[in-house]
Length: 216
Image (cartoon, rainbow, N blue to C red):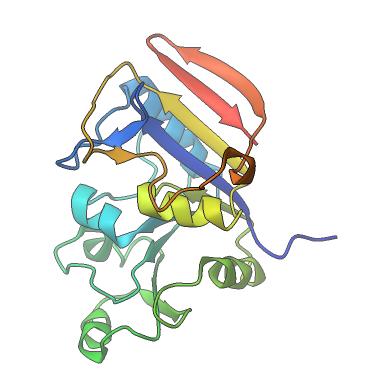
């Protein structure tokens, strides 16, 4: 039976102790070699998915730069349409296809501000974006593969709703520590191990002082 949603790859670089960013939001963990690998992945998917907080903290371009290839569609989860006008995402939306996904709860003034930019605004979900519905809509529009590069909160939503088909994690040689640092998967978590998502390790590759783990 044909899948009703795209194939979703969750990707992240994390420290040895499972942090993807420090308490101040610094997430520059990957080596140049790993960035090249990541950008090759970007070049081979139809879309990149991140949350508004990632845009707020990292101000990423979400483009293919360290290798040759076509830029995927950029999809930003932004329930209340709060993305800042100064963000690189909005500043480059005229050259890179960009979708801002909001909820029905998004203030009209915020939506009006987005009208000034060449982005597509999709309304999916009541108080927050419904990820499952979003993925179904994306599949109907021809998007077959999605690279999820979000933070711990978005990762939890995707894991909790069983929306991840492949997990690609780069373990970097850092120990970050800190209760306020961001872990790979945040959220409320599972109360029992038996309820947690269990994955199968498919491959391991070494990049000098890093390990890339492939799960599905």
